[in-house]
Length: 294
Image 1 (spheres, one colour):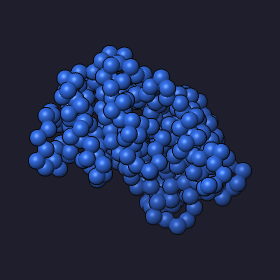
Image 2 (cartoon, rainbow, N blue to C red; image 1 turned 45 degrees about the vertical axis):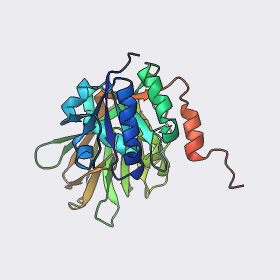
Image 3 (tube, helix red, strand yellow; image 1 turned 30 degrees about the vertical axis):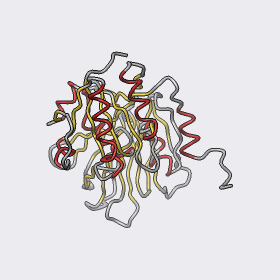
């Protein structure tokens, strides 16, 4: 890969560990002649910094960066992925949280990995993104998600009733707490906790997983990524139903709403390395083979 000449930082500024390491990242960049960019949110919280940086004033500035360093947890990467959108800027995640599948680099290894990136010794793994169009009684709204789109009962205590179509073919009528449509990346998140399968990140597919289905025989389904999924609500559930995008953006739905989900026309580029091992990540994060504390 080409050696970078610039990079940006996107961070969870609520993490004390970020502020502790930021001056060291700035020094690392200066020593290697790589231009550092930070977000306006980071700049607004800097105090007596003395750092050498330029400013990311809008998402359009991402296109002039060779990569973006995220510091936080998976949620930090998810928010950045939506901001990057179709701009193709690679993302390198540094894990500051408790459990992360996306930010696979830990803080202790950060500068070793940054040195590898500076030398051009890294790979790009493309991650599928889903696009969601919501027709909710006004102008259609479009969302993108790296992890999942969730439709649930929202403020209501009643079961959600919805129907699912795939390429205009009726799949099933669900009575459940909700329905998850996950990407392969999102298959290890809410979908997994709801009984869905683990799908390797590069396998083009969408996983539909019901949440606490009233009918136990309604199981998760893996669809190929060329399918267009449509969710409608045949029973008036009021206006309390909710749609969540990557667990971070919420839209309340009317009973007349229609939700259409399909593969987005672009992917998110994630930085990884020749020794990156997805199965090692699964074993570590999920505790496979661990019988208990010794």
